[in-house]
Image (tube, rainbow, N blue to C red; front, side):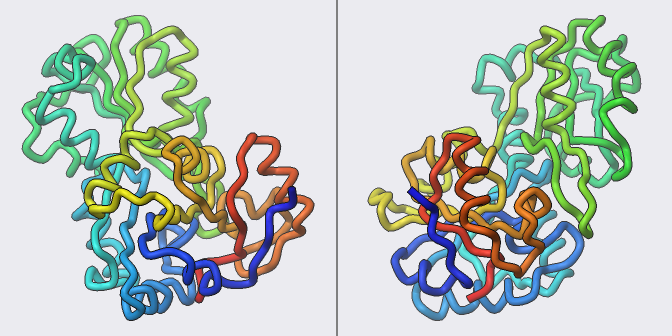
Length: 290
């Protein structure tokens, strides 16, 4: 069955009351808010609908709030925000999960300084080499132009030390200013392939959707729509959680669909791509505009 394409979000939004929205690729491109995104959030709010933002960003939620305010998206336009970084932060603080309880205290951080807020209130000692560490916390590459090859030696050294890894961003790649940027998930996938234990928190893990539904206070899943641009995380995660999903084609899949942000994609190509992943969003739109 062909996935229907709509030119805008409004006609689909009318069917639901609660929305779990991706950030990167839907609301902004990591640097700038997409045209119409703030207005769409405002329209949802004015119509009595509730939006929760759910991101695989490897940072605390308050850092995402500040970043979006700088893009012109005020905190008042959405109900709440979750991030994979926030979930990892809570795991490191509580140590309830057996994997995290066994990690030890000495941590080697792979990632840029902007992600250090993840360690706020966490009892760990940051170290500089794998030989000094008990575990690795991976938040992604330090520089935006780095590739997996730039990290092979470091990951091999971590593997030699038999260090478990925590990955705070399951995404393998994002689009920033129309450029593909490697994310922590790509490093984690390679590391897991070396035979080392890896804990990944964030989409498509069902647990983050359960947390989102709990925060929204909704039990009737038919009233909830997940909106995202990535089949492998957003749409797969929604499917696993038993939620309807809407694909934004102008994000991570824009190049392979041949449809840049704001342009309608070929329905046949959208269907073929979704079929390749074994997923069926209820519909697709070119961008998050009303």
